[in-house]
Length: 121
Length: 107
Image 1 (cartoon, rainbow over the protein chains, first blue to last red):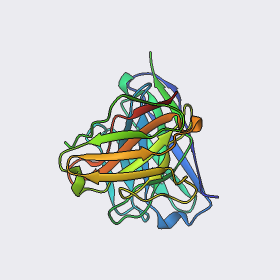
Image 2 (cartoon, rainbow over the protein chains, first blue to last red):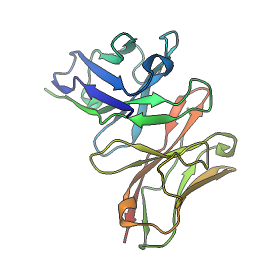
Image 3 (tube, each protein chain N blue to C red):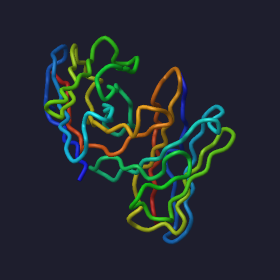
Image 4 (spheres, each protein chain N blue to C red):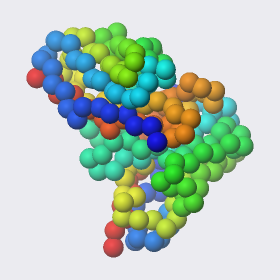
């Protein structure tokens, strides 16, 4: 079955870096774009970044542009989120999700189970 | 940036109809998607392109979209439908946008 599994979360000091991974299985990975979405405790979902199937197109939310970098390795069926200069307000559960299609309209399906990132001194 | 407004909470009696709204400027001209999220779980797509159900989603879930409001309707709400529901659209400036989410309580 289609599955996305995030990893790499943990507790990190403000200003430090962390890299999240999203491992995919059960579908032809290099045919699909992948998103990162986060959810702060008790808050709503916030879209962060997306990468096209072949990595040729990337978009970021203004809130993370310049600090976060999305990338993918199609040989490993994995998407990454490099997070630099982390702030306390980056504390969230981070989800990856498959993009239904690069062409609009598109949506998120399915989602991984998420990985918790806590930024705290 | 484009904003989507959802009520914080909605309550419905068991077996009755729940309506969860998602407000946005001219949202009727956009495609709206809805996600269900149960505590401690990942979101699940329940409606795509305004009123389409993915396979495996019960027929009691439906959607509509017109003017400045999109609505997710759950006809005959079950205890297992208790969850947070979020709407989502694509905007040319803000890209992928989510509403703040609505907590559905089934009484």
